[in-house]
Amino acid sequence: MTPKKKILIVEDQGMMRRNLALLLEMEGFEVVTAENGRVGVDTARSERPDVILCDIMMPEMDGYTVVQTLREDAAFATTPFLFLTAKGEKSDIRVGMNFGADDYLTKPIVREDLLAAIEARLARAEAQGEHYRELGGTGATGNLPDFSSPAPLQQNLGLTAREAEVLLWVAQGKSNGDVSAILGCSEKTVKQHLGNIFEKLGVENRTSASLVAVEALARHSAK
Amino acid sequence: MTPKKKILIVEDQGMMRRNLALLLEMEGFEVVTAENGRVGVDTARSERPDVILCDIMMPEMDGYTVVQTLREDAAFATTPFLFLTAKGEKSDIRVGMNFGADDYLTKPIVREDLLAAIEARLARAEAQGEHYRELGGTGATGNLPDFSSPAPLQQNLGLTAREAEVLLWVAQGKSNGDVSAILGCSEKTVKQHLGNIFEKLGVENRTSASLVAVEALARHSAK
DNA sequence: CCCTGAATAGGACTAAAGGCGGATGGCAGA
DNA sequence: TCTGCCATCCGCCTTTAGTCCTATTCAGGG
Image 1 (spheres, each protein chain N blue to C red):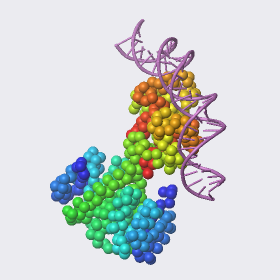
Image 2: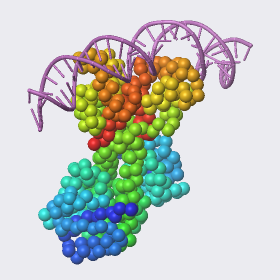
Image 3: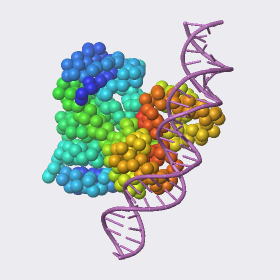
Image 4: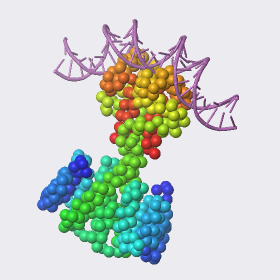
């Protein structure tokens, strides 16, 4: 929502293309257009639209081929693809849907239907993204795992509460001196705990222990 | 494919329901049925089908409400939902699609269309799953990032080729001595590179540098 | 009450890490 | 050709990390 959604219109009829573009721009979408299927595929690849509206009957490359081509590309596996068709012919629509389109709109395009369909597909795509992001946890976006609690380390690695606290800070790059100051104990104590941690984790130094910790935290975020 | 796909049929007309079930079972699908919308929602939650076929006009709860209800549940955010409708009325279908359905089939149901639509939606759902799994990379499952190539470190962190190699091993917990043996150079050289790496990454020790490296590698897996 | 496990900490020591300055050779671009 | 940038390596030095051993305190369970 916050970032302007980009819509690609692939439609050979100039008037129809301009009308649609104008309508969508007035609704706050960013619009790019292509005058046939072949150009449409190229434009999709360079512009990475959030939604694609595509006519079926076009010169150079028809709509079926466009959706088929784009669906082979992992980058467009999730992009909502809507057909625009002049024909009420169910068979045409069926063919398109079976090629992996997400919806269709019959001409003449009604403004309300168009907007409702676009919003519905955007909402659906977003909901699916969230679903998979949930599955993937924070690791899915390449971010660092959650260092907010030592509990996962305690649970998953069989550490004591204090050991988990020590490791939590060590894994964030803190020195023994830092950790002792943070936890309010002697540096000797930190070293002692670290030695025990290394033994429990089967590693030989803090860097390896940190790796194990990060992995455990990531696994925990992944639920 | 390997695991039998489970299909939920929500349809109030007994004959239609049994015919569809029989047809799909003969095609090798596992089929569960529900005789109205309310039961359909319950059944979906307990059976977790891979595809849902749902009539629109039903007693107790209509098809729109079913899809609306299920889409609110994260578990069904990605489940292909196909409407079965006796009406060729476009408006009915539009309403259903706008509620988050994925496709529709008009009665009388043609065997080929039904199977093609189901296969198309299953393929699409699977492709999307793969897409997001790719985004999640190995990190999505809580595993460690890909340490097979230093290239991502070189690219994303602005390191030289050699520096990236050094960091790649350091981030895996290797000591300077180990790295020098692995790379076939002096330990002094490793230290020198590490110093440069620390400066470039804005960190003060190998553990912090490793954290940055792991994050960069995870981000790279996320494409 | 005794025993265990956890947390704490000290001393003494070795090993590793990291900083600083200097130096060489290769290689590509101005 | 000269100038950076990169990779390589040295020595010297300080700081940090890590090990081994020992010891105290405290909370719970049998």
